[in-house]
Each structure stands twice: as C-alpha cells, then as structure tokens.
Image (cartoon, rainbow, N blue to C red):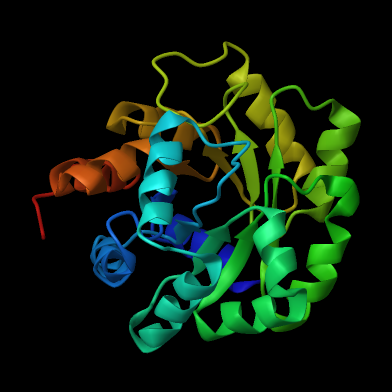
Length: 263
C-alpha cells in the first residue's frame, strides 16, 4: 500500500472522508507556497494537490486558469516549485500530489523530475494530458521512487475502459464528476450514484470525486458517493481572496461538522 492510499485509508479509519484541496503553486508568488501548505496541514487535510502553472492547460476552468496566469507572471515554474517544496520538506507532514502537464515533465527529464519530487515530499502525480495508453512511461519512471501515478476517469468512460483505468491507477482513482473542465457547478449529472457504485466495484483502491465541488453541501454529497473529494476552484478563489473561513468550512464538511476557526 502506498503512502497516498495509506493517508486516505487513515481518514476512513478516523471516521471521515478524505479531503484533498487543490492549490495553484505560486499564485501570489513562490513565497506563498510554504504558508499555504502549512495552513492546510493545520486543518488536517488528507493530502494536497499542488497545481503547476502551464501556458496551455486542457483541464483547467477559468478560475484555475487565471490563477495559473498569475503564477506564470510571477515567474513560477515546475522546477522552482519543486525546489521550494524541498526547502521546507522537513515541515511537510501530508502527502503532496503534483498536477501538471506532460511537456514540463518531459523538458525536466523523467529521472531528474522523479528525484526532485522525492526531495520535495511528492507522493503522487496527476498528468491530465497523458492517456492511459501512454501512462506506463510515467509509472516506470516514478514508481521506483515511491510516487503514484493517479488516473482520471470521466463520466463517459465505458465499463471496459473504467476497469482498465482503475487497474492502472495508483493511490486513488480520480473520478471526474462533470463533463468538461474544472470549475464550480450548481448541478451535477443525475446518474452519479450509479456511476460511483460502478467505479467502486471496479477499483481496488479508493475513489475520490473531483471537478465542480465548491460548497460544504457538495463536499458532503459527493463525499458520500466515494471515499472523499478533491476541491479546486473554490479553494483557489478563497486563498486568493484571503478567505480562510471558506477553506475551513470546506475541509470541515468532509469531517461531518463545521469547526471553529483555528487560523
């Protein structure tokens, strides 16, 4: 069992759902990465998805895309994000999952990238533009360093493909809850309960819901379908606005209660 899966299983053992916030690394400058991660740790999140700004994102909605543009303007790159993480590695207590696209990884060099991830406390990788058929390249490069390659499953994936993706995914299965890009939603598909039941039956590892989850109520609803949730745009917006109360409310919803501010 990998470190990432252990963290998700530990959340379950403690009686609540896994909660993984997404942050855009360097939104506000590289100096924001450390305090943001330490604040989220203080809230006892399960893991943290660290987004890397990219010039041509294919999965990012407008909120995350704008955050990426702000980070790029601040000079943020995959390399200096990993260097920043390594600078306070001893203070990182939760698994980090890097979300990036393949070109920066390829330019970095797979072995050098894997070694930099280890130095920065990274335990998982999400690369939306690498399909299942090409993902073995990433697993071969990263698994020897104890880094999981997390696969995404869409709502439109047929049963045979769901089974193949679930078998290949590591750490957890990222179950996309909407058709399209990331971003807050007021409504979701009507067949999600059946879809998640099929995913959980097919997957030997935890299934987490992501895309479009933006309120405490949605955290509870979507979390009930699987083993936890990933929240992106709502977290990115709240952090950009300095709205820590919203971040706390979203995290606390996964634990089944709203707690008094601790920050």
